[in-house]
Length: 164
Image (cartoon, rainbow, N blue to C red; front, side, top):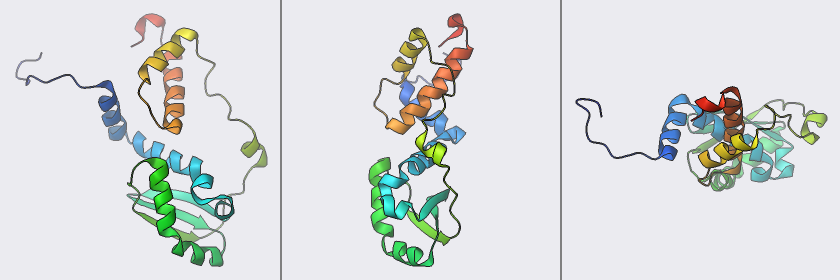
């Protein structure tokens, strides 16, 4: 213990990881990713065909809508969409949705149907075991997937004697 430091109890790795992710801004990236990846399920295929979540500003989600009639209709569905987002994310950090008229990005059909390219080679059984140990606590599936990729890349770069 350092001189002058208070007698502190141990802190769980999970709470430390959450704090570090929040300080680095990764939690916002993860939240944005969760909204983007689940958008079709949150709003349904018909609405998703006419909308695209653009960005988060504070607790407000900005969504682009391709037609004025859909823009008008979606303003009546704001509360329902917000409830779906809260249910999907497991939090109510998004408190407002603003719809804006604009052009939607053109979907790349090959990108939609193809599975994502691996970011790193398949981790070895030892690395996989270390990742499983780090992620033994239940997490949202999208967060766990991203964290597994990050950990696999990090652990693949380190020699076995320098891990952990």
